[in-house]
Image 1 (cartoon, rainbow, N blue to C red):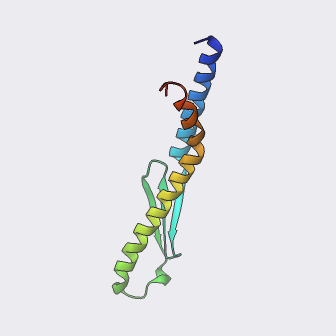
Image 2: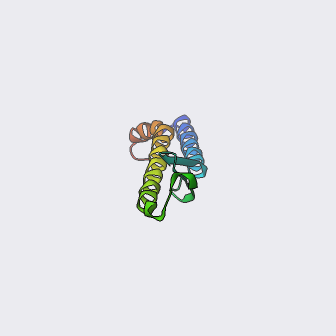
Image 3: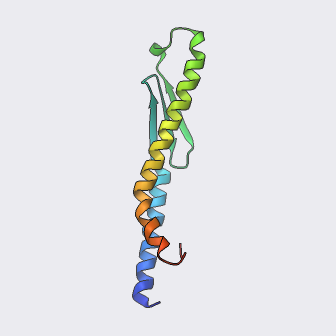
Length: 102
């Protein structure tokens, strides 16, 4: 490989690493019908769960709360995955054509 190609590969690798770090430090919030919101980091770590107390009238609503939390977390994870594809997708195509260097 010539030196110019090596420099381009190093630059691309650095950009990929920066993009991955940005994603890991980002937060994504998912919601479930406005009753529950869940925030996760790009590492899939749950940061917070918020429940609207006005949305629930009694203790019988616990199953609905649990289902809403799961839905909100799944929504947040879908947002993370979509952003990951958007940010890292261009590198996946480039890396595939580089003989497995990445």
